[in-house]
Amino acid sequence: NRKRIQRKMREMDLLQPIKRWKCRTTNSEHPYPRYSNMVEGLAIRLVDQVWVSDITYIRLGQGFIYLAVIMDVFTRRIIGFGVAREYIDGVSVCRMFNQAVAGQPRPKHLSTDHDPLFRFHRWLANLRVLEIDEIKSVPYAPVSHPFIERLIGTVRREYLDRLFFWNSVDLTRKLEAFRDYYNEFRAHRSLDGTTPAQRAGAALPRPAALNTYTWRQHCH
Image (cartoon, rainbow, N blue to C red; front, side, top):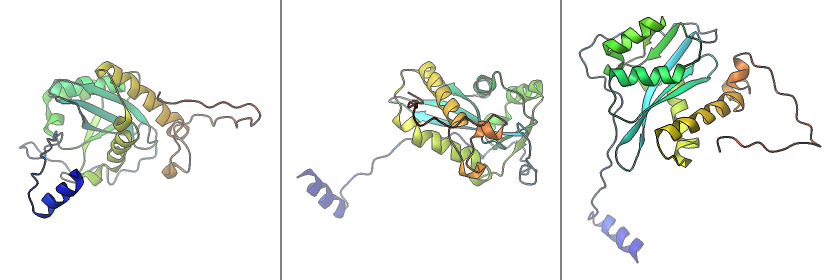
């Protein structure tokens, strides 16, 4: 059968490996100045003291959709998502960031990596207008951004890999639903079993009455 022929061809080294195209969203090979990791020695004890941002992509049948993710380090709260369909540049990064943080209080610091996308003059001007100080992570070291890297993995595994969406507008709406679920109902072991919203000061939910309860759907 097919599986046996495939196994024999693999043993005889006759299979042609499938080349998968990947979208590179971080490029540390650039001539711009590099900065030390100022987050490492910073004591983060306040809500909205330090936000962290990163850009990933979603593979489509043809092309990619780019996704900006912003979270608050102290509470692990998702601030928002920004979506861009076209090729991203400094203007697109500003648009995605402003889309994600609309209606939110401004942080004191924003941590980003050394990608040239975060060196465009319009991006830097946008942060100056918003009065946000940018601090950089360690180059070539994703572990210097552990919370946002873990969050992106969670969004992919628990939601995007199981999600169907029609277009970027539909994707944005569904990501907002996931953000609300993640912030208000998803407990974190690193936060002593509380949710990001509770860490930010939200009241604890009332205990459920076992004689009158209903199931609540999330992210449907």
